Image 1 (tube, rainbow, N blue to C red):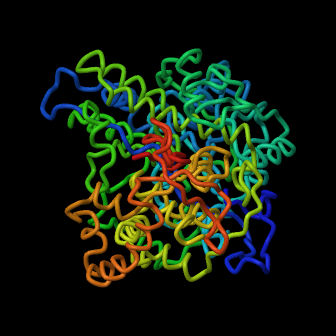
Image 2: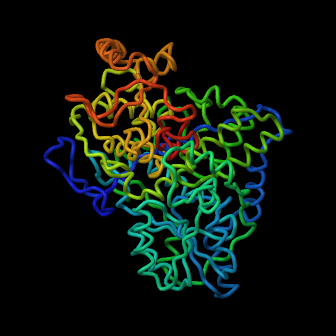
Image 3: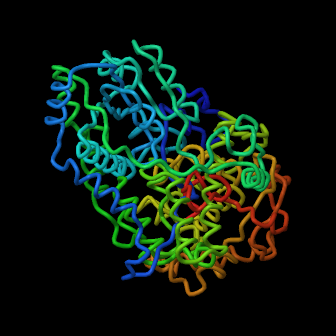
Length: 593
């Protein structure tokens, strides 16, 4: 969602901007997307060793898995042949890689005589260049996706079904494999790349394509606002959602699935056991090998899949009992416990926001209810806000002028962008966070807000180049949260602009320099010398305030961006929700975490 030329968002290079590069395809990054946005990494856990309040989610999943353990694609195909053919359906999976609380899966199963789950790896969303040297996805983010697809296949096989996996364009692959299906179900896409894919597939199918809404905390018709005209201020959205919206209970995973369709197709037989390697998605062997290794400095060794997502909920909320203190610890940057870190799994749909909400409610009933337990749901609401904002605003969130269509020039150059990407700006907080992102695919919500503000307001670089870089690297990348957070951080949604003083932020959130030394310790003397040289300039600009509200239009001769003082509205942030992973102002297509 950078997006490439095929999405009709980017137009190619302009001579006026030294950073403008012709994107040859699309790009990817995660906070989460972050995200997941920047919204998703914040969930907490329970007392170690206490069994009385252990979550039932893993036990339920385990019981369902044990019921038909060992049932692989061969046995599933045989069972399908024995039962005969009937009303055949397919289920096209994308960012909904779970069986629990999956509305599209439930709809596909209802009344089906057979069901073929399918996942298509489209090469155009992997190692393909997009904006200013970024790519659609790093190999590390692709690895997390591969793990998630493999986990889902294992689960489906344990339930007597399977998962067909193909490489190619969805509009080419799906019609061939689903030729005998009456209908193909899919979780409805929000952004233009996904909806364009749906339209192309629908034209080629013999049967019907049936999109089903899913993946949000509030359903589209129960979010308290018109989903096609969402308020651009989060507080307005939240107030209306909490006052008149409705959160439905999550749907348990099906006890059993319809059998696979009867077929003697060799292509289907191969697809039911095929999973591509990173090299088959366009990555060089060296990058693929590096992506397979986890950096020991990372907050977590993230592993994709529904099983790992449920285990993380169990650990953070229940075993480690973190939820009760989430509000106080959520601004951390080092360690695995300061936030839920659920944003990568939320971004791929390995866990649903409603399941997290349900566990938070159970925690309130069984342990304690306080501001922290509310704040986790608050973060999930941030995630919804960016999704509905993307639905309402369309491609405006990907355009240089943003939602308001601002035409102010960006004065930052390519050298400034590259120093930011590599973590060599001379600002220790920015550099440490950027190095963590590149090495691990993760960054805290606090970090995301600071590095975005620095790129936009201190370096004057086009915000889209930062969003593209995040899309490439973030494990929790989600287009709504990532691009929504960035366009809001740039002041291009018409709302208050937050400009962060990274010097003050460093003193407030890393006073002992534990985090900075963890990621930039080897270069500390040089970094600190350069940082101190520029600290006075930054202090004169911002008077030590945490953030400032300024005009999105630059002063004469200054980089594009705001500069005034002010704290911003209470409850508003400059990033996205914890749980969403990397998008918007609080960084929330996923991780506020």
